[in-house]
Image (cartoon, rainbow, N blue to C red; front, side, top):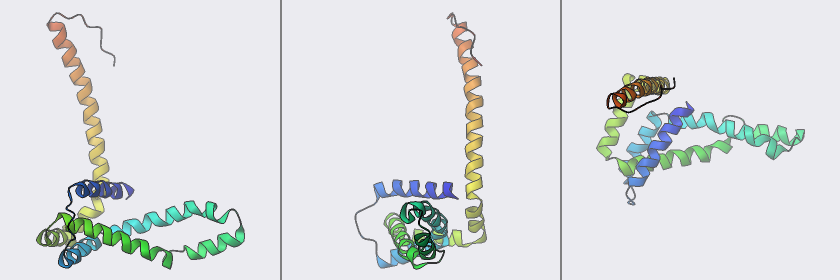
Length: 167
């Protein structure tokens, strides 16, 4: 899931670079918030925030059991400490979408992802991205080996003395 979050974040950064400075309309923001919820971006963030807080635990608690107990209670899943971050993330991502898509486009995108095919795509996107990357890596390695052989042979045919290619 973290690969999908990074992919989405990267896409957002690209979109931001072309985004206008104009504030999106309330209608666009509503459509964008609905899309963000349908894409389950907050669910992805819910997975990463507890991991962050777990890493902060030793720094904040300083190996003091009385602090660790209170820290654990304050950072338990569902604790209020998370709420402002979920709301800010949702609003900022919604604003980003609203600044880069029309209201009609946002509604069409959301309509697709709300359907079973869109939800299936979301569920499988991490695995598909990983498998696609592996296919690309495998084919690139194969192409590099074959192209190296072809180029060396073509250069030899032109009269160049070439040492045997490394495998």
